[in-house]
Image (cartoon, rainbow, N blue to C red):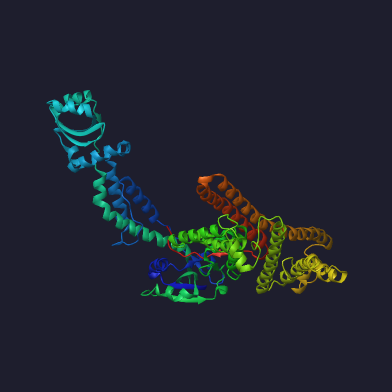
Amino acid sequence: MKFVQTICDKDNLGKVLLASLNSKLLHVEKATNIVNEDNNGKLLSVDNKFVEYLNSLNSIANRISLQLEQSMDCKKAYQDQEIIDFIKLIEDKLALADTNQQLKITDDDRIALDKLSEVDFVRMKKCHYINFGLGRIPNDSYKKLQSLKPNFVYVKLHTSNQYHWIAYATSDTFVVETNKILENLFLEPIEIPNIDVKKIAIEFKEHMQDMYSYCLKQSTIYRMYEYVALIDDKYILSGFVPQKDVETYKHTYDGLKVDFVEKDPSESGCEVPTLLKNNSFFKPFEMFVEMYSLPKYYDFDPTPFLAITYCILFGIMFGDLGQGLVLLIGGEILYRKSNKSFRLAGIVSRCGITSVIFGFLFGSVFGNEEILGPVHQSLFHVRHKLFEVMDSSSTMVLLIGAVLIGAVLILITMILNMYKNATHKKWGEVFFSQNGLAGFIFYGFILTAIGTTFLGGINLLKPVFIIIFIGIPVLCFFLKEPLTNLIEHHGFKPHATWGAFATETIFELLEIMLTFVSNSMSYLRVGGFVLSHAGMMLVVMTLVEMTGNAGPVVMVLGNIFVMCLEGLIVGIQTLRLEYYEMFSRYYDGNGKKYQILTSIE
């Protein structure tokens, strides 16, 4: 990112503000973040009168069923009085129309009115000796009307299955007789409007659209004043632009008299926005990072690590070669059809890759556990399959393997946490916290001791090792605050009295120990869902065998059901592991999203 300030005079301010919108590159900062006592800056405060004009024009457009375009391209500039007079002119014309009547008419009534409007409602109303009427008459009554020889003329405007719509005219002499005849024929009168709003729309459409565009343009400029600081009689628009786009951003103002000031983001005095940048494989997983919280600008982006671990954990729990191919192909098609905006589909397609891999290793294809047996025997020189998930001897292997995977991930997140805090020179967190070096040594030693005991019969839990690799780290956890103060040259002391500190820290120490245990055990769900997925597919395959000729249908429906249900559950559980077991150890978030300025309306 680069912090860029665009400086101009009053005459060019409006053009500069509109150019910044057109650039679609600027993350703008409010002037309140720029103005301070050191620069003696001022804020612009102007009443936006154009909002009222826009509201009036929108109201008129709705009344005459006119759709105004949200465009700022106008042919001319309008004076305030010119806008006010135009709005009053249209409103006076609309005052003649019976809008309440218009709201009650049906679509068929509207068709008849539209056809009658060709005669001109105003001219009809101005006639002194001829009376006009409009209404709908039942079809049977219309046939009777044709057999009469009334003292009025009529014309058919529209027909439906039940009615004929007619317009009629008669002289003042026969108006009472005409109304009596039509009443007996069950005519339902429709009031002829005083004015045709459709003609108003046609007559004033172009002028109204141009005036609306001008008001929208001016309103946008006024609304952007909150982003402009006035310093030393210069108007300054400030914001952040990606470093690679700075020159492109400057060219947006070609032809305008402006000056630019570029600064390093750290010199801006503002919180720097974050714009994630990842390759095509990791890109969809940015959605999960954004859901949790974006990283701060100077922190590292966890998206690649999240993407890799999410895919691996999902693939293990949803290991089926056939179903993985469906996720891979279907997800990728949806992702590409949405022009890569449907990021969840992109995540599904990438998880499909690891599902295929682990499905092959587990020997499962759409729940069939036998089809890959010969392949495994040929490739891996095994008796039956490389790994039989549903075999009773595999259960403990799966569960222990799941905990081991979790332990490795916990250690990696500790390394990431140490790296993050080292970049910010938070040495207390690096060395003494449960997610720092002390925690890494403590947890790593316990895992090593357990592993050597069960695998090699070597007992590492001897007094000297316990003191070095367990006692000292626990002491670091306990004295983290005073030790941090010491290396930061604030003295070896806690924030409160030693008694209060000891009481508080003892409980925190117990929480740390419980957290290590609960985080490790939480990964048991990985092995559990491997068994769950295999179990559900075993039920499907059993039903296939039981249903005979309907087996193929049951096979398809069963796989769809398992993919939808199990896929959803596994996806949620994997995300839970990412957020609660991993992010909680190394990731803070609290970043500010980079949002380009495109429109103020």
